[in-house]
Amino acid sequence: SQTIHQWPATLVQPVGSPLSLECTVEGTSNPNLYWYRQAAGRGLQLLFYSVGIGQISSEVPQNLSASRPQDRQFILSSKKLLLSDSGFYLCAWKGGLAGVGETQYFGPGTRLLVL
Amino acid sequence: AQSVTQLDSQVPVFEEAPVELRCNYSSSVSVYLFWYVQYPNQGLQLLLKYLSGSTLVESINGFEAEFNKSQTSFHLRKPSVHISDTAEYFCAVQFEGSQGNLIFGKGTKLSVKP
Image 1: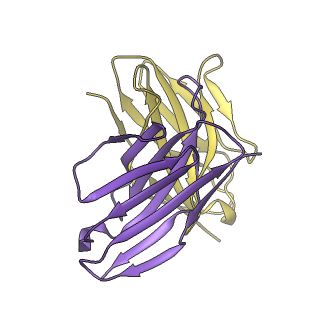
Image 2: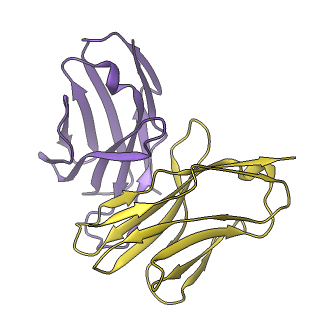
């Protein structure tokens, strides 16, 4: 069966510090991978998605970046965090060869607080 | 423009009462519809989805949703809620031709009181 992991679970970082959040998927190959941010009262915002190694699509302009160094690894990074980067970050995956209508499965999330 | 709207940000109900969480979408293409549930400090879990066929879909824990194409809605209902149903519920839509990406509503917090 497929599982998705995210770490760390919780992170408190000062403004201006770097960030690296990691997401890994087990039990599937060539998944589509997604990073979402959930901020209070704003629902889920899609930040990045990837259909393959090294292929990253950005949905919104921001000081965050994403990378996919391996098939089942997705990393969210920042060189300098802003207060507005605080939120709950969710990673998700979907079968890569699947068409529309396929379910996205979510990880447990990382809660980031920037002070 | 393609969009998803959940009109109610919070819905308080008493235990064993019925509940309806509303979801409307705007689209000029075919859609695939999902409801996800998020318990506190957890990720999202798929509750149910509509792809095609019967417009009424059900989940294993008593929720159901009905796709209404003419009203562009996919409301979630449960005839009798439990305390354990307290969570945030997200409606999500996948638009045909969108590479499979989901557009989420802003969520509805369901609070079930004893």
